[in-house]
Length: 272
Ligand SMILES: C[S@@+](CC[C@H](N)C(=O)[O-])C[C@H]1O[C@@H](n2cnc3c(N)ncnc32)[C@H](O)[C@@H]1O
Image 1 (cartoon, rainbow, N blue to C red):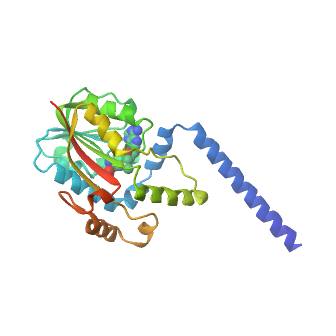
Image 2: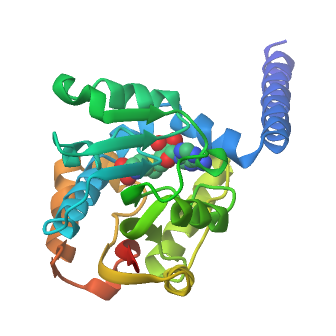
Image 3: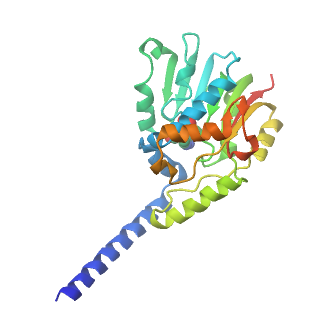
């Protein structure tokens, strides 16, 4: 009796799992890319896993802006606000835009009380947001372009919101890089067990920078580095991961191995 019972139970479990996966796949195909991206960033898991990378981004942004003056800042896809909140002073105004309520509630809890009236939080999709044209001295767009439905539409929004002579800090993961290819390959293997929720945009930095140059932007500075491969995050602490990256790639402006990194941060200025 036991043999057929075990077999039937395994078969039922397998059929139930197959059905659940089919349902999930149908659900995914019915949702827009924005809904899927938002669903990923509605959890704080991303933030916890990426703390060392956020620290590298924050330090690079601060190094790029060391000698710059600016008053009005827009942080597109602000996440937990780690990159732009440290830039806030009594002389500056900050708009933080993100379509994840979870991220915005993290930001809200970190705004210093005395500067609360210098901060505006916008819970919107950047592609449908309508902000006052040419009203920001500095726009940050870090960790976002890979996730939006239309990178071109995102660039058009940035251009329309930046003041002439304003600064832009933009991040891209270089599509044409061996580290990106290896990371994508490992992700494909993992997706057999855990299907990917959506495909990120793969953009070449040369094309991105070319498009911005044609739109009257000049590159001021760049810093690139590589991230430890998938799986490393499970075995090493955030502090170790941070140190490994710094050891290999240095820090702006003293970068080591500049052409070996696929995570690229760019500082550009719009011509006045
Ligand atoms: C990878 S995180 C980067 C966060 C932060 N900029 C950083 O580097 O620490 C991407 C963030 O962009 C937001 N985001 C992605 N697509 C967006 C969109 N279309 N509109 C608004 N926010 C978006 C996500 O909710 C998430 O908080």
